[in-house]
Length: 227
Image (cartoon, rainbow, N blue to C red; front, side, top):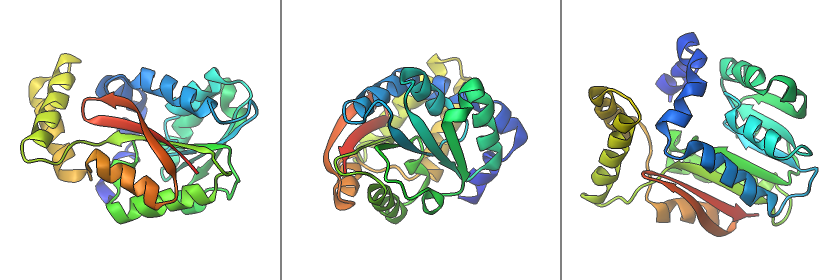
């Protein structure tokens, strides 16, 4: 985790961050639009939404543009990434309260909905369970929780195939082939990738119901579940 946190504090990495997700995550912009849609199915027009891993501000900006009445509490451990989020939001920044830290540093709520996008693959299984439980505790009854992260079948042949497809996607997006292969190797070595069934089980164990897949982008998947 230390190396990851250092990367999100490195000035050069932070400065170029907002170029990354649209390039490296298949269907990233569409995933944000879909996340806003599944949130909007259950939250009011003046919803208060908890956003974990809010550094950079890309999802905050997308959600704020999609729904003018929503306000946000964004949480991220990196002060530099939160500063970038303020820049990304620009005139929309007044609708977001940003908190440096982790789930324990998030306000108690209760919130109308919550998201955790491209974050949970950075933590181990036990921490995912704890995060999911703490999010649920902060949500109103039946409030939606939207998650998306790396998730791929764990078979000896299936997972390497999915990660090779991801590497091929990076190369097709303009990443040099050797760097695309290195990215695949780094993901395999440093991130905690679970099988989709495990991801859904964690949501259920935390007390969420009806986890439903709404997004698949090669080795990335996203679900909505309800408190």
